[in-house]
Length: 317
Image (tube, rainbow, N blue to C red; front, side, top):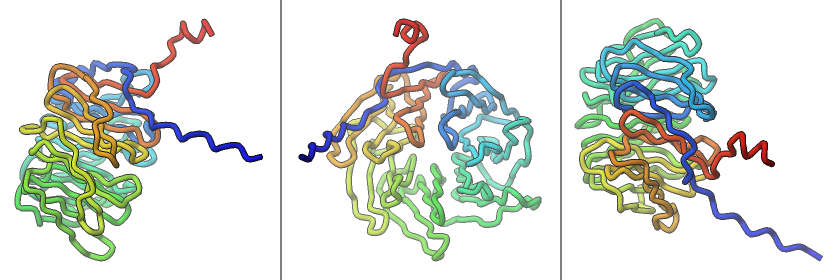
């Protein structure tokens, strides 16, 4: 006799506030998980970059070297290096352990909005208000970028890299996907300035948010629109969107103090997370677990699917 398969559980959402971290670095411009999700990076308007433990909410290190507010950061796959970018027009490569600047990369003509390592952390990609994406070799001693992509007609707001593909979003309303292996460029036109782009985990789709308060899911190979997600407010701020770690939900920051979370397939709103009274500036979803980071004003919030057991609960059980 065959037993029926257990019903698949509905995917859980990060709806419980686990902790709030007061970053004490001015306004937090961006918050990012590291590669394994054990640490978080916070980018401050006070020119500092800080590394925190996610589970404890404790400060591990502060990285000082930028001359103006830090706008984005990324960690290498092996946690040995960080890169960050700033309104000071520079990109910095850091040594995680010592907190020292390994290299300061100059060349952008305006503030640098976004930065990311490639998978092997051999290249840093940076996108700037100057309309270019610059590719920097992390191992070389040369100070020029190895490549400059200047197809955009306005500032670059977002850059993501996945294997041999590079995805960029620009204020010119276009999502560009560079196939570096084939030397091809694919352009999708969305009539509103793009604030954030990302690949789906399965690599089949791209997600983009824009200033018409809409998040769009596109089929990567055909450019066909698979989903539109609305209800949030994004009119004047460069805010993040992302997919959950299993591609089940689409998430976006909003100017109304909430994070909106939609069912990817149905397009319906699954969760409207009340973060606070100000603009939700940034968010980051854990690479494998149901855990979300949000940034508002000077604080970062850590959200999980289950409320955390306190020490008293553990002792009681």
